[in-house]
Length: 263
View 1 (cartoon, one colour):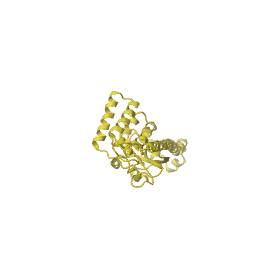
View 2 (spheres, one colour; view 1 turned 180 degrees about the horizontal axis):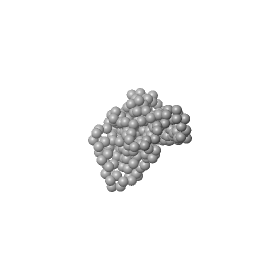
View 3 (cartoon, helix red, strand yellow; view 1 turned 60 degrees about the vertical axis):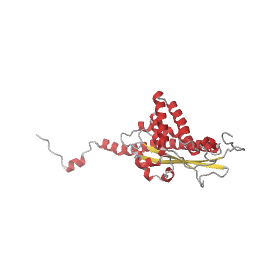
View 4 (cartoon, helix red, strand yellow; view 1 turned 90 degrees about the vertical axis):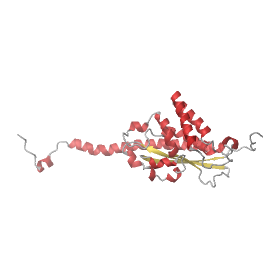
């Protein structure tokens, strides 16, 4: 025999489960606050690394820009024109890095192969060399799953050594090196200002939707259009936070001219 169903008045007066309900009401905002604090901590950490990358790029620029044109395929001194890189250059570079990792799958070998191949094959332009100086410090920030929204967790937000591998295909469209105030792609003053802009992917569940934006809504999207491979930006998902820093240093040029090779 089924028990009698409680009336509306009885349900309203029923006090069972009140503590559990109060716990749920208090837990949800507190948990959201905790996740936001964790995401803000990651963003602050990334912001410091972007500042370091800007310093590294500026230190590279002050010696690379006035360097011997023979070391950069005859590119004029003090030139920061966009690099001339072909698809075959990129394919050859990735193939070299891949073979190096298969023979010795370590983080040191990865960085060594990437640095060597980027300098040798990717145009050897001054701009590429300066970009590399900004690229290396930011490699640990690359997400393990670029643009993916599934199976997010705090543990995956912290990441592991696989971030170094994902930096190969993430950094080219998420990192831009620009030179504010520069006209016609040539440095004419005694100092250079280097600006590094980085699209940091937020991966902490829930908090990333509160604190971060989709790639297309970033305020720095115009600067990120100067990234190495901006075409990929159209296809990336996820949530991002634009981080940028500027560093200004004096040019370290030599008091003599360089001779042409063979002379």
